[in-house]
Image 1 (cartoon, rainbow over the protein chains, first blue to last red):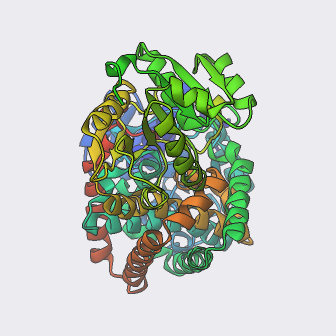
Image 2: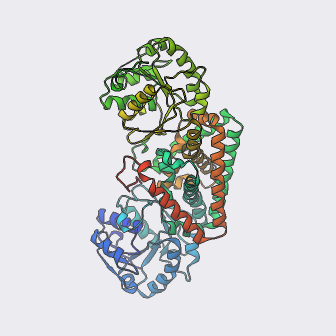
Image 3: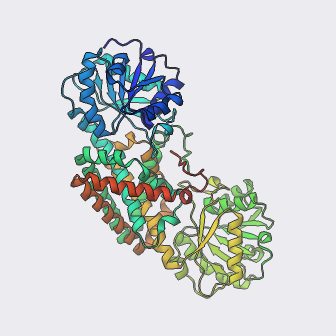
Length: 300
Length: 300
């Protein structure tokens, strides 16, 4: 764990999909001087990544890749990350102790999978994604202006933290720190529960006798876009952040029921106030939610 | 009610906002030969519309505008439309009986406001909008590939129907017909209830102690965009399509609760199937929901 200057670090991506491919592409676009390597259990996505120029080279031999790497980025859904992480750390100890980080959408379940203290491990979560998946959907701009939440552990090494921060900043992201528990509760509300809403809305529309999804416009386009997200990843998130997700879903259901009561009562003044407040809240967060948009211009 | 060839009709917009301004702009862009006139209770938005070239001229005198018009388009939120429509039809009878159509998001409440049979009235609803409002937010492409639902009444004149269809086709829209009741039930599910979801989600996030909206990405951007919609319009929609909206909200709440039960039970297989089905449903409707996008490329 004596990495070279951050931008000269060799970065190894374990699993090459949309997110890790986008990070590899963003580092390349930023002029990253270190090598970008890939590892995975099978060659096809790695070959695609190399053909697209996202990685310089790849290997199917994990020891080899860990030995070559200064920073190891695990790019996998939550359950696969939790399975791979202890194995990676066991091997890393014997392979020069590279820095290890992950990108899973939940952090408690990942941290719970650790079998030993490893100061070079920095749990991370980039708040960026797409309803598409696979390395061929990679987008080097995916992290521009987006938040990457790091949840360093009490025994995390500060140089490892700085290196992981430097890598993400090179990709265009901004860094925040949270505790593992706060991360999982906040993301349950800001991401996981909204995905469940989009799923429930899509299923309800599909079951409706009038096929209302055929009469959708821009509102429905946006409210159902993430219902096309990767089913395995979202199954894993729902399984591994269950308690926080159920809390957020319950808070949402209660709020929905409060709004229903105003509508049932025909209370126009209260509705108008409610909707006005939401407009103000949404507009106050435009620049966070649309970091690449000119201020005030949402896509529509 | 002997209109000239459709594309030579003088169209009068009663109330000039985002939707009517966009229609006026779309007709202009399509080379519409007839005049485009504006009327409203106050001059400022009409002056803006004229300055932007959306309308050729305007008047604050309703009789004058109705007499000049072949097609009258009422562009107002539901309650204002229902107030204006009977007055417009009373006057229209004495002003050459122009064709009259409206663009309100609910149709039952509008049709119920009629005080006399007027064969030239064709109720309509373009499935297009924006979270922005006002004539300055007009967009001549707003209706390209979008659906316009017409709900002709038993006594509607077929020539009037053809003229209104021709106007919308010139603006780039495609036409469907529905009954008033089916329209209101389908739109409650495809548009009105999704707006209430976005409002409830935004309110829940705003009340959350961890300020999770600050940690939102593209998913939350899309799931809250329409929470910035016009509060008065959405109050009116919730007041005037109450029963159908409550039905759709209840169906959504039930579906959300079904999904919650799968998560609570940790039933990974059932969740994966559920999410996979939603992905397939969403993708099957990509071209309807994203008419201007190349196939398979959603914005993200």
